[in-house]
Length: 262
Image 1 (cartoon, rainbow, N blue to C red):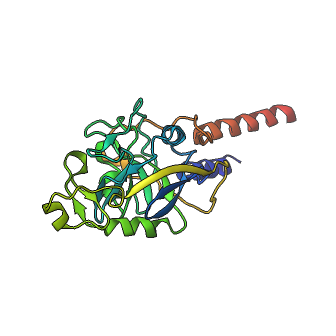
Image 2: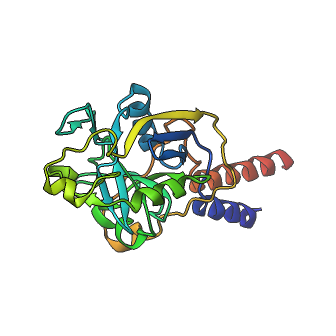
Image 3: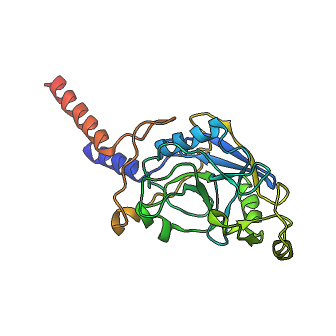
């Protein structure tokens, strides 16, 4: 009996859940569906959905592209004039580096040397960045995964030419804009930016895409890369039951049954 419970506890420790909210990042290059990992990163998902539900991501732009690395958004909006406007941000969210920064995952951006500084900005991993991002700055919190054909759109964005508009937009991808335009002082507009018209919830069910198997971050604990705070049990779908709690419950049941038989 105890051996069985230990096996179950070990499996619970090593597994991650795909129960999630699904959102759609709607852009002028196509829509990107993302499965959020509510159970494994509850505080981060809750934080992200607060920005989604407030409309903060309307007219947002993809302001950073690093080919073979990431595309990044969530920080700036275009309101028909330059410079870009900052997204109003709230209280930073507690870091939850439970999952790995592999290709196709979405994670939170944050300030250097401050693991718990993420607010509105996020990025999509274009490649397997786990060796770097799973341990750097306390580990970057992966809170979702691009699904369906969303990475086709992300890859198309990653192939756009980049330009330096200054500040955080020093590596911004632009559509139908050339080096000659930049040299001649042509100001990019809504036809040139990769615009996010909105991010909306398309499926708020507690159980979605159960076949997804997010990759756990196994590097953070062995690397000395930070002191991550474990995920809380709050959030839209709750957290997993601690394996030690499972063992305690099981042993309690065994003891109770022995007393009954006696």
